[in-house]
Length: 200
Image 1 (cartoon, one colour):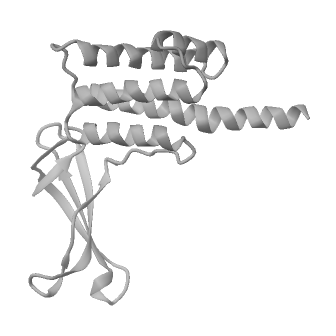
Image 2 (image 1 turned 90 degrees about the vertical axis):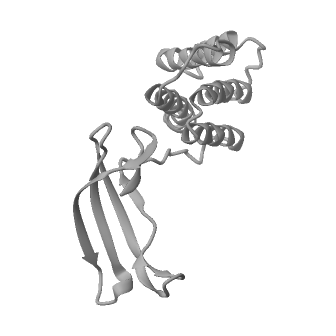
């Protein structure tokens, strides 16, 4: 069956390892089919689900579109992250899914730049802005290292025509960008509020 391997980020003919039919009731509409595939390129497992649906062509019940359960291809964007930054992350994800890995790196750099701006650091030099985030206690040493590396990678992507990014590198760049925002807006802010309550 032709299926997407989210690890290789390509569609290919995957080998079927096994299938399982599940019925939640006596009604056929409640049936679901779970299939286990093996990617012929990376050999990773792919678990899918198909639920029963009405086929408008043949006018009968049939298993519908395939939903990949594992590996999970969805990126979790915390709703607490400001809308402008979430929009920028969504565009980064679109680039990644379109196999535009250089564009992914550039968009992630742009997201970090927007993060600095929304945190009140508006230096025209991104390196100095990231440094100020650390100095002001907005990010710690670990996040500073990540953000600075994303800045360097983004610069390379924008200015070095010879550089190429693999799907793995591109995914890591995207994951680190999401992690910086998720940690800052969720865990750090929550911990700061906790400390403030304790001091009172």
